[in-house]
Length: 396
Image (tube, rainbow, N blue to C red; front, top):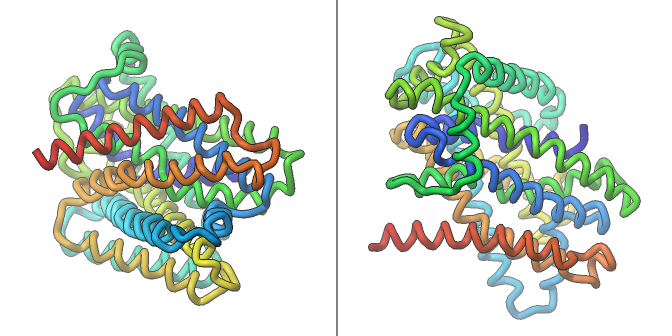
């Protein structure tokens, strides 16, 4: 298990569970192709980020800052990327905290007081773990809890027996039903997470030491992210077979928990509650952590993650996310909106990544070849097109 597992754990959070469940509830199997595309796109982009990190032993943020050092466009571009990344991750953090609080509400009972208390407690816990530097000590426990929920989805999938013919059609015949565009972008935004590109390029430096390890880096990336994508597809398919087929909507944690009833009966809410809490807390820590890495690298802050600036950035992302979570908007709406924000942020970060990995002065003969550029360009084109279509639809 290398850094690829960390990336998978970061995107298999409450946003993934919620967005995939809603996709299955509202549109059946029709949007499975988007999850397949998002998984392949994630592998393509994360391989580039990991290759950059292991070859140069520098993070994406640090490399961008160095490349733009003498350009008149440096600070406008740094401001654009930094602001987009910071605000995007703050929105994503709101989704993480809301998802974890939704899990607590599933067990403790759904009320505004329980939800608000959960948000505040989670924000304090995440901040404390980051400031104390003890996150790695609890990470394994959280990953076990997330793995438990994942195993539950797999088992439920086997019991409800989704229509395999409809699944294959949904996976390989793209379609966008009426009203599905926001959900479609949310599915891509919950899988191809922009901040993971910064996190991955930094994480591989702590595991591998140079170009000789590229084979291990790629294997780790493909296997870990491939498993994550499969989990997302199973979640959406299970919802399509158990909730969409029965005409059940998903407005609350109790509705989401109905997916597990064929397997766990009345204990379904506890399985969902524990899983959402673990997934939310894990992601609530990785999002500000990645933001801190990216911003300190881009701004060339001395001291890195030991600096006060790094810690201030991390905590501020948590505070803003908690504030957004306490606005009174329904948790499910916050989670989906956060994934949507990430879907719009993706083209900006992906464009910068493609620019960097095409620099032979940085990567030498490990720079992108034609095939990598074709795949990366296609991902960027699709992501940009979907974002533009949604913006035009909103303005019309």
